[in-house]
Length: 91
Figure 1 (tube, rainbow, N blue to C red):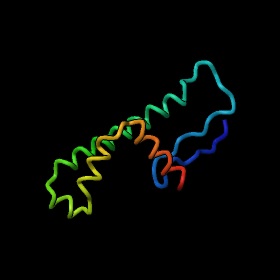
Figure 2 (cartoon, one colour):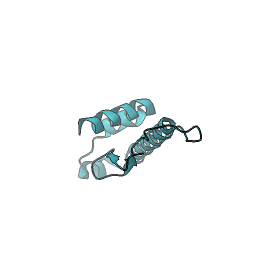
Figure 3 (cartoon, one colour):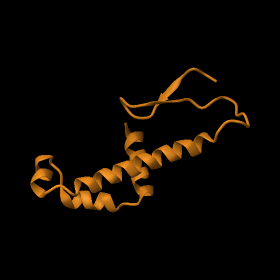
């Protein structure tokens, strides 16, 4: 396995690079990565729902729009994960 690491997000956690060979006792790295992405998307959606509990004045102070937040809060996790992948790939 090479000692290189690849960045997932700028200024965020660095994931280890995939090994050059696969050993049968290794956990499925793709599954682990997908579970982490699902958890991040779930936390993001939970944050949107928590922000919706604020009043309009508090949202305006944070430059947030209630309509946009409610749309994001209703998105399926699959779509949030796809948007996150797209944003990270563009960086």
